[in-house]
Picture 1 (cartoon, rainbow, N blue to C red):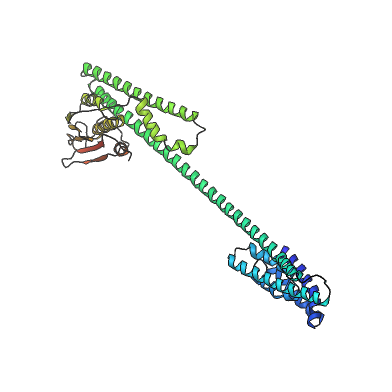
Picture 2: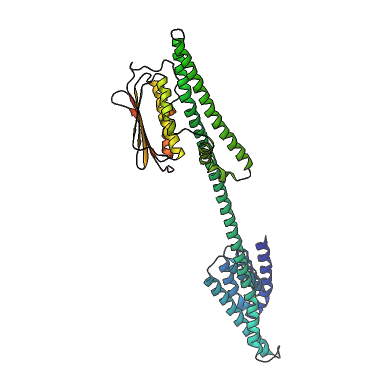
Length: 415
């Protein structure tokens, strides 16, 4: 609507000025009116073709028409995203054209006696009028164009920042979800390690207790005492773990105002450290007791240690203990009565362990206690060892038994 209105006003102006142009040129006034109206109407395409509008305005300058078209056309040209040399060239052409036309008209007026001012007024009037018609619209257009480009740049930057913030929020949510999954996996692994071995031995002893209850009361009493001891040990470890989890949840509630992205990334590592710091986790010093419990359940276990024993970081000792514990549990489940060899090697920069069992006395036999298997033991052992930068290998032996091997660096590194 603005462009149509400006074009209508410009056409009317040029049509009126076309009458005097027709009189000076000696043509019918109607032709001057039509010519002026057509020239002024070109302003309607100023946004699409600003160069054409300026060129038309320069072309009709000698006819002393199209002043509005020249001013609006120069403003639009300067505000457009065109090379500065094109804008400068067209503005210079418009300035020169209006200067020449003004110089000639003022000189003619002075020659007819319409103006009684000195000759100095001719160049002064030409320069002043031409600059007044050219400089303000060009400068204003350049200012508006620069401001418009600045606003567009700021808007694009704001949109880009908004997209980046959205991506960061999505990544933070993904990291938080990853941390939650890692925490759930770690808790499940700890629960499995704590419960599986103790309860498996309890079930084995309970089955033995059932078998000898009437035949050998003294052995039944001994097995019952062992079941009670193992149950109390399992409850103690469970209470320690639940206490750590409860204290961790209370700490997270206290830090609820901290952004999720900052807390989620360290959740799993912090929880693991809490278990090691607050709970008295198992260590290699309890390996003899662990093997003794298996031996009491009827398993023949041969322990051999190579190298000089030395203290390791808590996470290394706990992982080594859990690997041996889970391997012995699997022997109870799948190869009851098979002789088992536990080998531990202290090396310069690592600790290696291997648990290998011979084939069971009866091929295909499992524990008489019918222990269930969830299939997560080997996966949990591999996750523990890999988390410390170690290597875990498991599989059947050529003799028909099963072997579990692990090597853990003495200075653990994150996998």
